[in-house]
Image (cartoon, rainbow, N blue to C red; front, side):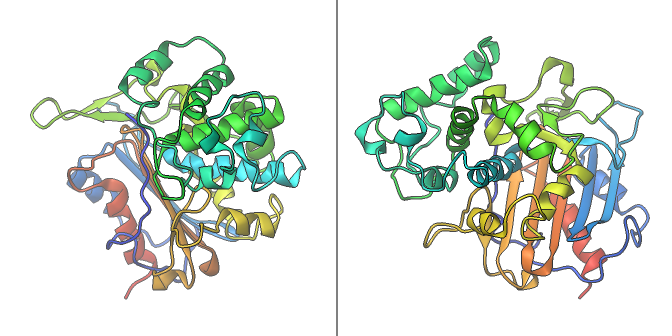
Amino acid sequence: MINRRLLLAAGPAVAFGLAGCSREGAGAPSGSLQKILKDTGAPAVAGMVVTAEGVAYLEAAGRRHRGAEDAVTKNDLWHLGSNTKAMTAALYGKLVEDGLARWGATLAELFPDLKLDPAWAKTTIDQVMSHTAGLGDSGYIGRPWLGEARADQRPLEAQRASLIAKALAAPPNGKPGVFEYANMNFVLAGAAIEMLTAEAWETAMRTRLFAPLEMTSAGFGAPLGAQPWGHVRLPLGFGGLIPMDPANKPDNPAAMGPAGNVHTSLTDYAKFLRVFLTDGGGFLKPETVAHLLAPPSGGDYAQGWGVNTKDPWAQGPRYGHEGSNTMWHAVALVAPARKLALVTVSNAFLPEKRNAAYDLLKQLKERFAPA
């Protein structure tokens, strides 16, 4: 299944603020996460509060997978799904600062060797990463391609190049200028990064984003080794949650990486989120962060972030994203004016019932922002 995202525009799970963040782990009511696991049926859940100074709170509970004896830890790795998109956009911003790219670059400039349909002539990378280019997933990323891509042995750069060449040779399958969330947009952004750097998106991410931010745990796909496993939710009455052995590569095809296959520890994810709480934190320039967080006129999606300006607790615009490959679930909210970010993760995505990540967001409110 295709990665998901949520603009997090409303709902009780996100309409709150934080006050008096304490040191890591302090003040957590005993058994609160265990109750969430019992109520939702998720194997594990974890949550984190981040400030400009670093991690203010981190807690994890549950088992690494259903049937396992080993418990999750605060250092475990979690699949972020579509929360990867903000990282891909930030990487492009870093290339702009390094003189390898520019904001407003057209697809014709970024892919000079491709024969583009004339309708794409003036489309910019900014439109692509705000999902307003007119590029949808339909006809490109679907069940037939998912099966083919998993068996494709070509280098990932070649796989992405083929997919983008097919899409850009045809007219837009959406309406340019109108928001349409699609993973294809960030597959395209990743392919553009590969053209600009002459290296795989994965290599560029490791050397140009993970390494400078000291995100030593970050990688791609389902985390291997003694780590949490994702779970597939079968229809009711057919066995419930099924753990997915990471040795079998249970994830979207790797070619979709720029749209959603980063995994990392929560403490390393905090290093990325702090970029948006500290005007770049020395990794990006303030003007680059401002560009990444600026949606198109009248829009509510910036470069990899959903934007909400109506959450009073944030004291300004609040940026959010949700990620899931249907086996994992991650939610992140960032409030730069408050210098606060919230993150919750689970190794199961349960959309049809109470959800562990959402329930933990409510718990974070009760712990850190009492009425």
